[in-house]
Image 1: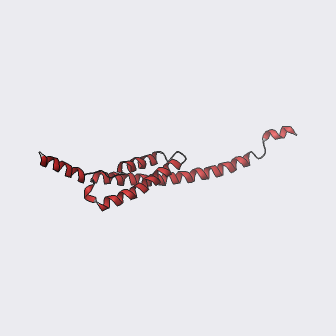
Image 2: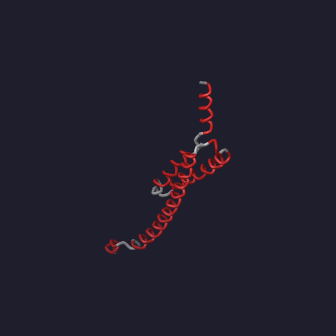
Amino acid sequence: MNNIENLKNEQSEFNKQLKYSKLVLTLGILSISMCWCYAFVGIIFSIVAIILTKKAKQEYFLNQKQYTLKSFKNLKTGYFCSIIGLIISCLYLIFVTLYLLFYKSAISTAFSSMPWDLFNK
C-alpha cells in the first residue's frame, strides 16, 4: 500500500500543469473576442498573454518532464490566439483611427456653413 502511494506522489510530481497555461489560453481567447471594444481591451489581453507565455515557456524548458504535454499545448494555443487577437486589435485600432480622422474632417467640411444661416441675414 505504501508503494502505491509513493507511485501516485511521483506521478503527481511529474505531471503538473504549467503555471500560466490556462490563464494564457483564457486571455488569448478573450483578446480575440474583445478586440472590437475599441481595440484597447484586446491589445492589453494579448500583451499580458504574450508576457506570461514567455515566462511559462522558460519554466517548461527547464523541466520538461515535470509538466504535462497538454498544459504546454494549451500554452501554445493561447499564445497563437493572443497573436491573432493582437493583430486583429491593431488593425481595428488603425481602422477606427482613420475612420474618425476622415469622418471628422468630412463633418467639419459639410457643416462649415449651416443652411439655416441663410435665413438670419
